[in-house]
Image 1 (cartoon, rainbow, N blue to C red):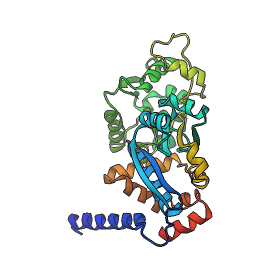
Image 2: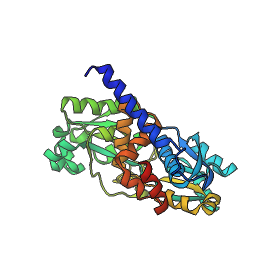
Image 3: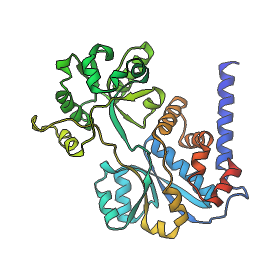
Image 4: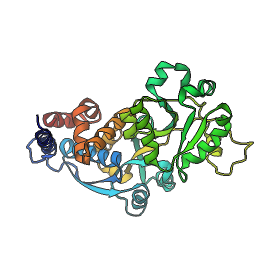
Length: 332
């Protein structure tokens, strides 16, 4: 089939799917059962996609009239504090919003659920194919004993990233260079991810830092290396740029809390909707796969939501009430 015809057919299918999913004129959709609802959409791929999933479920399953509010972590939390809006804010990275805890303590905001089942995930990784071939490389002890099997290189974060400070301390803790592993400091996140792509393309080993959910971890199968048990107190010390060398020590990366937040007023007003948000949790690998697909297809947030609804329908239906499930099933 000629390439332009394939693209045309693909575009038609995508448009058709979105029209089917977002056509709320159907008689199956309840009429304004829950009224107006504002949903914050974080300014990155996963945030905007999750907001679009929530929008579809709220409109079709619960009869809400949803307004998507483009935002980011700090502006969203500031707006919650000052205006009590948006009603729902998916994917709040708690570590990036110190004021969030105060809002929860004051009873203004409720943490409905964790949006990622494993939280925001950081760590040192190797390709899964390498881990399967050499299982001993799944621990830092095994890597230090076999540096050539991982290419004798550690791929580090760029300057200015929080992970760079932690890694710079951990490389000393684990004596990477003394054990024959050269630390390569990447100049940008794009270069770091490109190094993974190049390693897979060339079927070469790779060892370094990455995080998820991300398109990279969705596209390339990676295994996290056990670099030691998580010790939050120790990790806090390891996060300090000028930490006393005698105080830095072994710790894995704690998962970052990534939350679905709702205002307390909205939870009282719409307990059924609040219950849905309380169950809206995505497995990390599902989000990584979504992000890889979205990046490859250059898809919009609504197209990404359609992908979730099509490929993980049972997961979405498990979040909602019996009545909402019936309405959604007719659409899906």
